[in-house]
Length: 222
Image 1 (tube, rainbow, N blue to C red):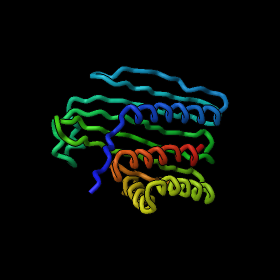
Image 2: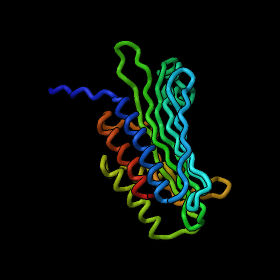
Image 3: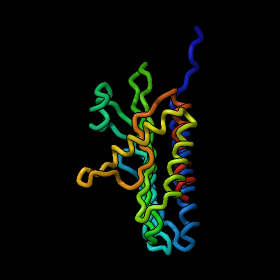
Image 4: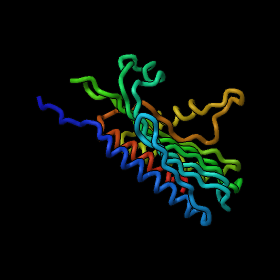
């Protein structure tokens, strides 16, 4: 029996991709706005890591857009993670993410939200590394246009099919469930995709799917 090739998580590659993704999203939104530029900061985080918030305000197209990169080093796994994975309690961790929210000035342009993240648990000596990807994007129109909704979901489907044909229905349902508004009995906006704890196929395959969905946000909204 042939032994599977090692496929360890590549944290620097994830960091590079998210750093570049933040820059590309900011550049696209600045080009669409045509006037206002993002205000950029770099803030060291306690215990290591960095936050790089980028905020655009009071433009002719966008009332406000925020695109935030965060790299966190933690001494102990957060409670939310250990509830699902109690064996990880007490481990150190690193988390890297880009999250964004875009509020347009024109009501005919929808609000959009996206988040793409990677989580790596510290490894006790000899243990297999534990990691996962999460992400997704959703859209909230004020005035609905059928062709825009079709494009949004068609782009999301194509991004998911890089990995497997069954992912889009799963991720769409998870988005609808996650952004359900119980007091209204409806989903928020037209939805999109949402996933967490994703490690299917090993690191390289999961990383490819994650990059595909992150890049699809720009294709769908920009």
